[in-house]
Amino acid sequence: MRIHYRSLLFGLLLVTGFFHTSLGQTTASQGLIADRAMVVSAREEASKIGVEILKQGGNAFDAMMATEMALAVTFPFAGNLGGGGFMVYRMADGQIGSLDYREKAPLAASKDMYLDKDGNVIPQLSTLGILASGVPGTLAGIFEAQAKFGKLKPRQVLQPVIDLARNGYVVTKNQAESLKNHRQIFIQVNGPNTFFGKEIKAGDTLKQPALANTLERIANKGKNEFYKGETAKILVNHFQKNGGIISKKDLTQYKAVWRDPIVFPYRNLKVISMAPPSSGGITLGQILKMLEPYPLRNLGHHSPEYVQLLVEAERRAYADRNHYLGDPDFVSIPTNQLLDSTYLKSRMGNFSFEKASKSADIARGELSFSESMETTHYSIVDAEGNAVSVTTTLNGAYGSKVYIEELGFFMNNEMDDFSAKAGVPNMFGLVGTEANSIAPGKRMLSSMTPTIVEKEGKLAMVVGTPGGSTIITSVLQTILNVYEFDMSMQEAVNAPRFHHQWLPDLVNFEPKAFGTDLLRTLKSRGYLINESASPIIGKVDAIRVLPNGKLEGGADPRGDDKAAGF
Ligand code: DON
Image (cartoon, rainbow, N blue to C red; front, side, top):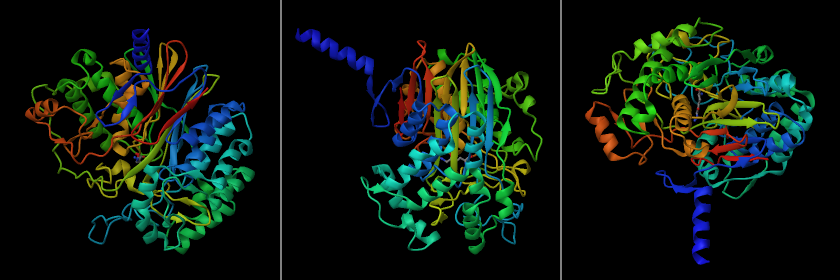
């Protein structure tokens, strides 16, 4: 009998599958399984509110509005009213599309606005304080998507979010630490009485009455409240009083834009991802298509050759990204050529397993990860089978740190995603050219990669992540982990990640997550390895459709991320 119980326990462990990741956490090897519907996001409260809206009869687009605003309440690092994002959708009947609600440069912005009189970039002007913000797009985005496809009234969708802002949510350990680390800078930017200038501890219940009031007005009056109403007035006054350039006209003119997603085949998959002004879809497509001719599965997961191939494809794709991509309303982008199989095959023509290619035809840029970064991604599948993949951001943690007390939210520092000066790296170490220079009303280039994967004509995966320039390579590795290496959704999310972006000519590895043999071999082949100073690479939140039609969530153990479903 005892043996029987023991083998039962062993079986259970196998099924529920626990293993120890090299990240030092004990992590489930299979994520939450749900029969019909699921939301995976950076916060449990946000996933649960999304699910609650689905249970009330809402669909994925209603859940998007609820989850996005619940993240603004419970995850002020990145969840936002003062930022922007991208959404890729696939309806149950296979129709696809995407929505761009990226921030725009204010009308008073100019190409050299972050340069001093000698033409040098003025440190922090595009990342910290009143001049760092683009015109926010989030409210336009969620209202546009919900009005077109949602089923419920915004008032009903937003009610649980308003309640959460008013009644409070419990601060996690990670959050308390992050808030503590940023307290001085909040005070420096906003003054000693700023809301987040007070001490906030893990376990505290954080109530945000100003944000609750803003959300209440928006729930009652719709997106015009944000772009034309009292909220707009308060926001513009704040900017004008403090030397900013966002104007009334900037807000009234802002529009979210429906765009054709980037769609490409990879083996037996169809990948649907975000088009410019995000570089995500094209760059992911270039990398996957450069890899397609190689037998990745046979090379082995995280073998030196596997890592080399990804790095070399990434090197070539990011070089193209930085040169060709920008806001399609301002620059013409050779999308078809960039994704052409013959072109991509020729791009890999000079690759050899013997020795690393070199990125260094221009001076090496320094990757600066001194600022902690926060964007956030959530994935939704509703009970009808509609899927929504959304990445939204303030750019850096708490954006520009400008917090509008009366409104209860932080403003983005997305202007840093422009190339302030050709060849000078931004905070992600990305260098850009003319295609991504600043112009009034232009959208800054993004790396956000909200993605949906179809297999044999059916919904297979919804995936995305924060992580700045590492977003694209994290989404890439998650897809490969599942489809080349047969991992579960959760295992694919848990697996350690590495990253390369052409410049600087370095390969970043998650610290202590890769074997010394692998790193030694790569070094001997000429790769410059950065392990010690690497940040966490991405926080992937994804959903996979299992062969039996159930859903498996993959919530990243690197953060407080959680799946919820039914
Ligand atoms: O749009 C972009 O590519 C960046 N603003 C994203 C920033 C980000 O992911 C920071 N989070 N970790």
